[in-house]
Amino acid sequence: RTPRRTRAGAAAALLALALLAGGCTDAGGGVRGAPGAAGLRDPYFPKLGNGGYDVRHYALSLAYDPGTGRLDGTAEITARATQDLSAFNLDLAGLTVSGATVDGAPAAHNRAGDELTLRPREDIRDGAEFKATVTYTGVPEPITDADGSEEGWLRTDDGALAVGEPEGSMTWFPGNHHPADKATYDITLTVPAGLEALSNGVRTDRRTEGDGRVTTAWHSAEPMASYLATVAIGRYETSTSTATGKPTPPGKPTAPATDKATASASESATAPRSLPVLTAAEPSVAAGSAALRGEIPGILARQAERFGPYPFSAAGAIVTEDGTLGYALETQTRPVFPAAAFDRTTLVHELAHQWFGNSVTPATWRDLWLNEGFATYAEWLYTEEYEDVPARTHFARAFAQDANWAFPPAAPPSAENLFDPPVYQRGAMVLHKLRETVGDATFDEILRGWPEKYRHANASTADFTAYAESVAGKDLDELWKVWLYGDGKPAKP
Ligand code: ARG
Ligand code: ZN
Image 1 (tube, rainbow, N blue to C red):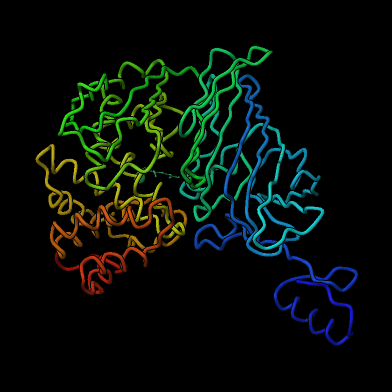
Image 2 (image 1 turned 120 degrees about the vertical axis):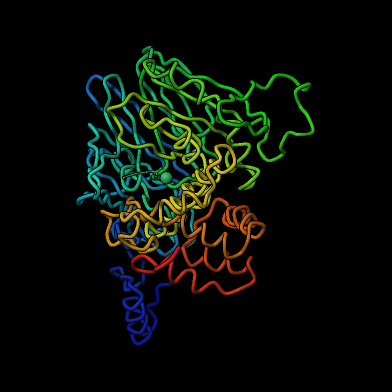
């Protein structure tokens, strides 16, 4: 917008327009940008995320001292403005911000609750790309979820474990912490010598600093929702291999890829042979988890046959001692498991999330059943193929369980219920009903086509029902009405 001073009338009209549009005027009567919204109005977490910009890339440099629990961070955020911006927010819980810049110039910063507001010296134009840098420090505090579980930066005896679903990532870096704003990441971790520092994606660097600390750099080239970012610092044993692209049955670790002689016609083209697989486990659980960690490439290869090409350029798992985390989480490329939850079923579930949740990410938290329903159905498909337990047996069991009928999967009553059984079990039941209705061939096409259509994007429940109907070539209203949105249990399965 151009400032106008020629005629009072025109100026007044422009001013009125600007106010209507939510803009402000500067002292000279010219129009300038407005502050971005402090939240994206998620149905369950209205203040999560921020309006007015879209993050492209996070470059996080974090130094951690396990002795004191102190984190020193610099977050460099590359974003594009989606409106003329006079100020914008980042979500950050706890910690102390010591400085901020926008495009190299100091920016005013202000904290209120979990919102950090940056006010650049000059407005940012709609469409412009800008770089915001925030330096911060402090001892991160975990968040207690609506459902009572703990997430965020969790301190361990010799390090830390960071997990973020749904809100925890704001405890360790400032960002646009709503799944709708996915971005690529560089996460660089500096820790005392003798400790591992793991994160998502591909390890690109490891160097010893002048003071003896060790810096490890991780790169996520594919977009990631911030709740899927992870850090694991501590005494870990790591193991690396390269996926062979061959599906393997349970109990069969993938033979390490050797030379070209191992390539054969039966190799799947969907899990590339060059996919680096890095797993890590804390020493006390390393031996016990090694065999199952070895099955990851083979499971991914089978899933790639069903769900389409593996969406990321790295894979793996992090297995921790029990006591830090109470559940497994599908952190991108490298899911995290407390040892007690590192079983084959949970592994299949978290690996399936790499397609369902991580590549195709829910538009809002209300669409979470698209993650959990699919990941649960992936378990059912696995036992159907390898353990003689068909999906319909799981369906019948789930149908009989009262807990699954508390609410419809596409409409959890509150944030407290987001991870309750209906989201998982009834979510999977919806998919099973869809399979029965459209037949196996069409269902397989949907399983593969859905993650292809929304690869590295966001999707809502309405996107899914429309997509399934388009593949089926028919209206499925009745199915959605009863199984996806319906209150209570239908008279018959
Ligand atoms: N997404 C995880 C899984 O099912 C569960 C996360 C539970 N998080 C929570 N805050 N309760 O694989
Ligand atoms: Zn899950």
